[in-house]
View 1 (cartoon, rainbow, N blue to C red):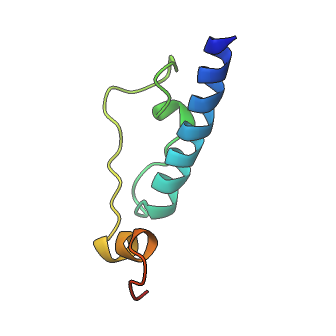
View 2: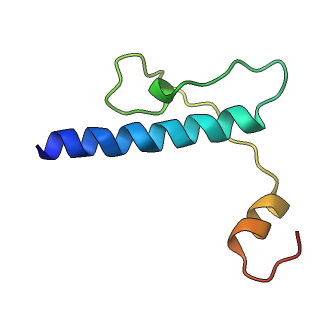
View 3: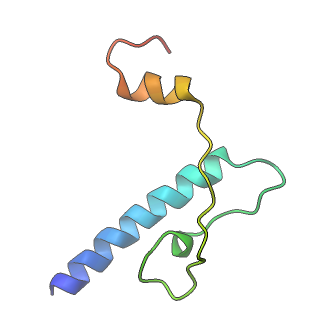
Length: 68
C-alpha cells in the first residue's frame, strides 16, 4: 500500500515536471514525458532535460512583493 502511494505521488510530480519543461522548451527541442522524470519508469533516460527559467520569473513566483 505504501508503494502504491509513493508511485502515485511520483506520477503527479513527474507530470508537473514534464509540463514545466514543455512550457519552457524551445522550438527545436523535443517534448518531455512524465516517464522522463519518474524514477520508477522503465523508459526513463539517464539525463534529464534542463529547465531554463529566467530568474525574474522565479522571483515573481517565490518572493513576496516582487514586481512582476
